[in-house]
Length: 185
Image (tube, rainbow, N blue to C red):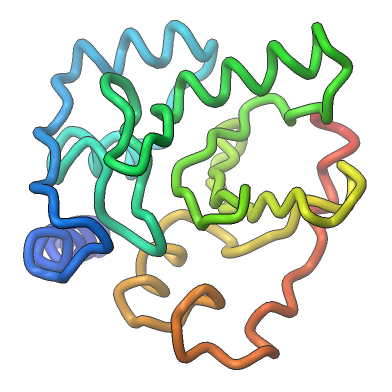
């Protein structure tokens, strides 16, 4: 079993056994056709690991804080819209309403509360996970590198070591600004 398969096995076990913030069953997995439709709507391909989370474990509902957003379909139990719908709405509102520019190819994947999201950069092979923290006041100061890649982000969650963890120390929030923001808007 390779590293990715081991990681998916660990995520699946935790997703199906760990307590979640809401007492709802995990949603069903997504069929491959739904992922293909999502990619067509987005205009870019999803990272294979992100696709595997939604097609092999559940269409959201597990992970840090409020959990992974559904990729498509119904909103999450907390009312958060699916990732594809959020991405398209952010991109559209920035273009039409002059609101904060949302970077191209950066898909929100997990609600962290208070308007914050973990997002994955789908336009690079690294799959950098970014923190969107809009409480910073200015768009260019709202984006931080949370983890170098999606696999590391998942391992951090599995280990209970993320900055968002209940027992995290204040130093854990010492995230570096995302240097590619201006190039992606």
